[in-house]
Each structure stands twice: as structure tokens, then as C-alpha cells.
Image (tube, rainbow, N blue to C red; front, side, top):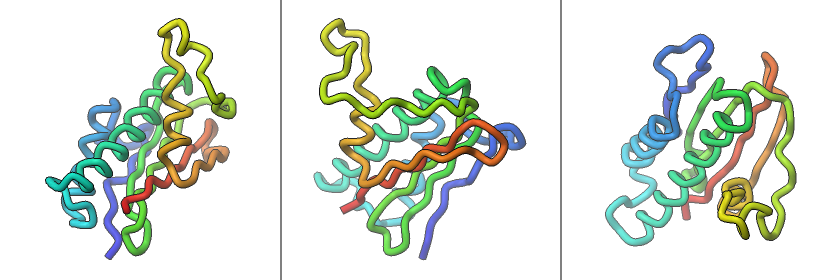
Length: 143
């Protein structure tokens, strides 16, 4: 069975997540209700932590660097081997390829999120969004 968190186009759905915390809550509920991730076990908690971290970073980047969060979707891949997270933001500007050492790291100014997403996710896809902006879709492994 395929499980979906509620797909949201923030422009037309007032119930869509507007913050990283709200998006994390949706991902947590999706994973807990699916029984694919054994929450409460060490392995399950590690997978949940990775999924929530990637969710936070994607949504935060959309808000801080992408002109605002316009859409959010989370679902399990067929067979439950991965969690697909998609975030749509308002800018068509593509994030740079992640550097080996983030520029802000030495100064304590961040720059860790995008490389972290690439390190944790099995795939990262960036495409133009239907109504402008871009859609970033990642797959986080659940095994």
C-alpha cells in the first residue's frame, strides 16, 4: 500500500504546512502510520531522524532562499524502500552543487543544509514548477 501525506499547494490550500515544524509533523505522522519505519527501535529512530532533518532543510531553504514555500508533498515510494519529499518554492534559481566544505562552515554561518540533503538522500531532482519557481524532490532511504 502506498501512503501519502496531504499534498499541498500553499497558494490554494490554507491547510498546507507553512513552517519546517509543520512539515516535519506531517512526515512523522506519515512514517508512524505506515509501519514501514519501526519507530522506537534504534534503526527506526535513525531513519526517522534523517527524514525529519531532510524535511527541515528543504522547507527552511525554500523559505530562506527560495522566495517562500509554495508546495509540500511527502509519500512512500512503492515497496516502502524510500520516502519521497517534494518542496516547491517561488524562485527558479537552482541551488549550487554542494561543496565538499561549505563556505560558511569556517565562520559558523551555516551552509551545511544543502550538502547534508545530498549526503542523506538517495536522489535529488530539481525541475521547474508548473506555475513558476522550482520543485525539489528527494528520496530518503528507509532501510
